[in-house]
Image 1 (cartoon, rainbow, N blue to C red):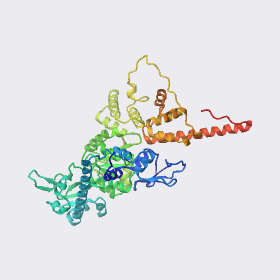
Image 2 (cartoon, helix red, strand yellow; image 1 turned 45 degrees about the vertical axis):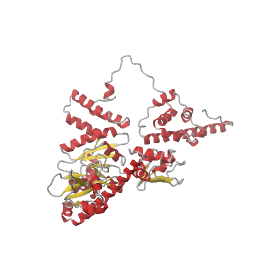
Image 3 (cartoon, helix red, strand yellow; image 1 turned 30 degrees about the vertical axis):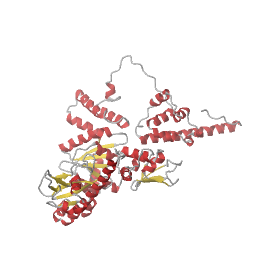
Image 4 (cartoon, rainbow, N blue to C red; image 1 turned 90 degrees about the vertical axis):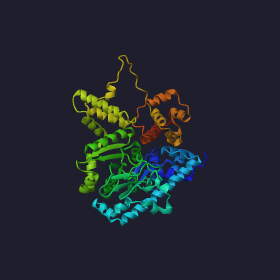
Length: 541
């Protein structure tokens, strides 16, 4: 492999979430602003391995292991440097640059970021000199501290940006970032004029685009940057960078509809609110948010438009609802939006509303179908149940999908097996299969086959009492599994193991209990042997 450009390495490291990467391999528990676990690089019973999201590194106070996300992958997954970078890049949907053109693209994007950063500084300077814009923000209840935190600015009327940038930015760069619009005849003019400016930053703080709110009368009320090499509406989320400055792994993120909602919620003590960028919620945006937290709460107006937006969000979210994720919906009282609600109810009132009124996505699903398909007779309930299961079928396999299906069945008056199984045709002569053989060893094998990286935890001698794994596990380690081994393993019913963290925890529990049980059995054999005055026989393999 040719040398990976340093700029690309920095890009991959800065965009990777070390908590997410390590958490998929090691069960982390939150402790303040850090995450702790028993060190994966040496044996210990008390956690001394810490991951620090703010600084994006890990450190073990027991053995001294220390590094960033690349170093962890190299050590834990036994990868070389290029392979570790390739793995992280793949998670981010990035291709490693191998041609000169790829490096040129990286350099161009880096330059465009410099241009948007300079433009943002210019907009901020204009705000300080515009009494009209300052008065507008004050009327909305914003403080100067909040305006500075979100880097708010102002674009004056007329065309001034190109002259203000001067030699610092070429006209074609200003056009490429969407700051200037170029007509067919070659004339250029400012896209944002007489507007309050909201810089849109990616999770690392780079300004990738802008939103502009007109002062006074004018259309459109809000104007966003166009699609550029830096800015893609369906991928970005407003307010996420500012939220991460408070806590990179919040308990939840609240999705609202507008820039001002995000800003005023933050000013009133609700820092973990974000907004989509003038478009319906996309899978890419939700995937980005679920990298930061396990719970997302959509907070919409309670009118028909808010309900429609919620239904669209639910439809997009269902394929992403794997075990460990939570999705809720809260609808504000009529005539209220997050901005007005938090100003009248305050931080405690808004938090209480979210806590008490946000409903689970399964509850919202049934509520929506009840409203869309009136009727409570048997035929109506059966029809709604079928529609619900058609939606649930889009969810990934796992405990969450099964529990959601069960809740929907209960709502429609069905108990016992899920509706789709009740109506599945079965032949009158279908033979009953005997229950699959069950064993602890095959449960361990099922976990390792589902998540191959867990196999490394089975190799050390200390993982097993007296250092010897069971025969079937030894066959796994020797790459000599039989078809019967795999068949029995696949038949093990282990709920939730699709989730890597749940599987890792389950494996740890099984191994620990096995060692304890075998140790206790050996102790009892010793005691019996001492009483009988004979030497104990070795335990059976």
